[in-house]
Structures are given as structure tokens and as C-alpha cells.
Image (cartoon, rainbow, N blue to C red; front, side, top):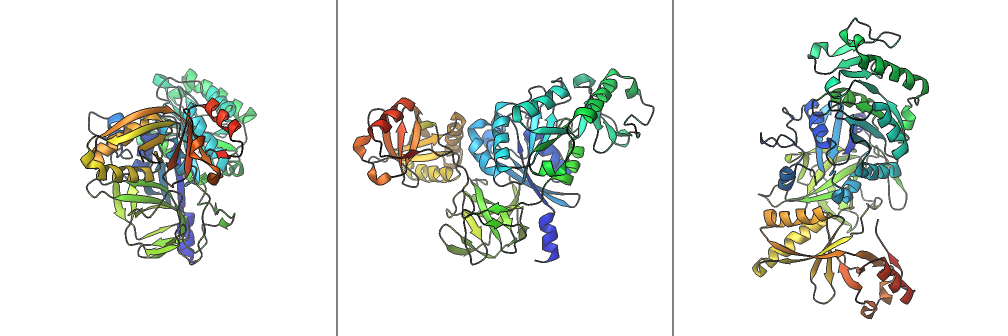
Length: 524
């Protein structure tokens, strides 16, 4: 491998931003892009009256609601590093998309609202990061508003998440009395709302303000110094190794909306964030990023990113080697080889053709229906399959029909494409082939209905079937239709596998008592 290629790979930093809805995730993404020079004007999600929508929320329904429901991929260069940010949906109904995105990154940035602390969705996503051993960096946001005490927030991180924490900086005051942060790592004080040239104040060898400044006279400074003393004496030690193993989270305080503490966070993060990491194949081979053969996997498929072209993009995380436009690659699942002539990189919906990309990068391949989520693509002769990506067992079900029968061709095409993105799951009844959709949350159905209308010009009728317990069958050959009853239904999924839909836990237990030989299983 050429030293240039090795250097390129080692300069990559690929991370996801995770949080509960409304903690400021998309605003943070905007500010990072702003520092990376990728956008000139960081318009926030809230600025709806100005018509400035967040750069990373490109889908119409996201603009209307001010939430992210798809994962955006954005790339910029900063200080000799190539940064790939994946902004994930915060809404819990889209956690499956987020889980898959977390399989494509090497570290995660967790945004916590200073007033609310650790919220349910944050906890769920954090657990996935822990499961994968992903290093986690924490940004405690909205310090410009009144919130919980910083020591209480640190304690909550450790107790609720079960991870040790190390404060890289510490707030001086909060809300209207927020004066700035004491930067333990860079040994300086960063002032809030001051001119650029006066922003940083030096600290002497005793850790005190080295200059005579009004801040010294405030009770907030005194309180911060007492807290710092406590952290130095009784807090956790900083350990880069433990950060890398996902056992210690560096904690930063700031305010993404007012752009305070974000640049300091970015620079420190880039010093400690991991380079592209190896990935396991299904037969437990380790594929190293510096392996010269190209390989990658599809973690997301998005239809109609450009409604004018009705296009579909398969998002590929490059695991090893180098991608070159025009190269031949093989899809492991089908063993078919093809030349890749159209490839793209992203700034939300702004795309440009990419000629070269390396391990750690995310590229978009134009898809005419060849790819599925979880597919492995390789450049060499030898094919293999990366570990499976998580798929959830849906809990909510709807019967779906087109209001206008004449639109049935568009209806089936739309459903097929949106199902391939993985946000909703497709089922059909055995004989009448009525279409049913399964989802983890209600919002997924609303987004589906909206997109069918907006992107395929099809009005759909949605008939709720309520909650069901979906169970797949290990030994399908032993299943007979007569096994179904008033509280269970036998359907097929999009891969033609048989699936039982039970009304509740009781109905499932009753079925298993009657049919002990049938082995049922659920997805995640």
C-alpha cells in the first residue's frame, strides 16, 4: 500500500451524533460543518421564519416538523483530517435506522440537554454504542439556559449510563449568568459572548486565572474553581486507552445554538477520535482498513433524494482499501460483478461526484434495485460477507391500499422502494396478497404516507391493525395454515419467509403449547 493511501486512511474520522430529540443534535451538526468551511451560514432548525432550514434535514416532512427522520451524511476537512459526520434520527420511531448507522461509524458524539440530563432515547442509543465498544464523546448542550448542576450531570452520566466520565472543560455559571468554560485540557478559560481576540484567558501553574479579570470577583468563578479542585482530587483520571475502549467518556460543556465551545470540542475530539477501525466478517475474519483490497457494506438505502430524478442511493461505508470511480466490484450476496460509474459524496442533499474515496469514507452508489441493506461489496476476486446489520421486529401493523386503483403500479413501486430503505417492513397475506406494513413506531407510517403522496403521487388508505407480535419460523416446512386461529395470522415477509402475527403474548403462548415442534424467533 502506498504511503499516500495509508496517510489518507489514517486521516479519516467517522462519527455519528446521537441524542434524544430536541437536545440540539442537528444544530451541533450545522456548527461543525460551519467550522469545517462546508457551510457559510449555520441556519438552525428553529429558524423557520427565515426559511433557513438545517442543512442536514433535507426531506420535506423534516422541514415541516423540525426533526430529523433520516440519517444524513456530511463530509468536511479540518486541520488535516477528513471528517465524516452521520447525523442520525433522534426520534425513537426511527431507531432502527440509527442502529444501522452506528454500525458504520468508529465513534459517537452524544449530545445531552443540560436541563433534561439523560433521556430515554439517549440511553437506548448509548447501549448500542457500548455493545459495539464504540468510543463515546459527550457534549452537554444548552449551557446558555438554566439547567442541572454540572456535578449532578456528571453523576447522572455515570449512574444512568454506567460509564466513567472525565470533564475536559467545566462551566463557569449557567443560563443568564453563563460566563464561559474552564478548559482543563487546553489550560485556558474561554469566555462566553466576547470578541474573538479576547475569547481565551490564560491559566497559571496553580490553575487560577493568570490575569487580573472581573470574572475572578464573581461567585460563579469561585464555585467553578471549587468544583475543579474536587474533580482534580476525586474525579476519574484521563486515559486515552480507556476512551478508545469505550470505558471512559470525555465530557465537554457548551452551547451549540450560540456556537460556544463547539470549536474547542471539535479540535479536542479530533485529537482523540479513532482512525477507521477493522470490521468482522460473518466467518469472523478481521478486515483491516489498511488492507489494499477495496471492501465496504451498504448500511442505508434512500429513495428520491432528488425527486426530479427519482433516484435511489445506496450508502456504503468503505471498510478497507480505496474506491475509484469506474472500478469493478462484486456484490457478495449475488456474486455479480459490475463497473461503478456513478458515485457520490454528500453535504445533506448537496452532492458531488466522487472519483476516489478510502477506508472510513461514506460514498453513495446509484442503485437501480441491486442493493439491499447489509450487502457487502468487494473489489478483489475473493468475496465475503460482513456481519449482519440489526433488523427490528415491528410491533405496529397497518393494512395499506391505494385510494385510486388506477395508481396500483405506482403504489407497488413506491412501497417496494420505501421498504428497501428499511424504515418500514412489508408483509402480505398468503392468498389474497393484501399488503401490510410493520413498523417500530407510528411516525414511520406518517412519513410513509407523506412520501407516497409527495414522491410517487399516490394517496394511500391506511387501516390500523394495532399491535402484533411478529415471530419468524425456524422450521417452516412443519407449518400448516390450519395452525392459525382467531388470534394469530400467517403472512409472508418481503423475502417470502413465513411469519406469524400474534395478537398478544397470551395468544403466542397458547400457540406454542399446542404446537411444541414449531420453533419461533424474533429479530432484534
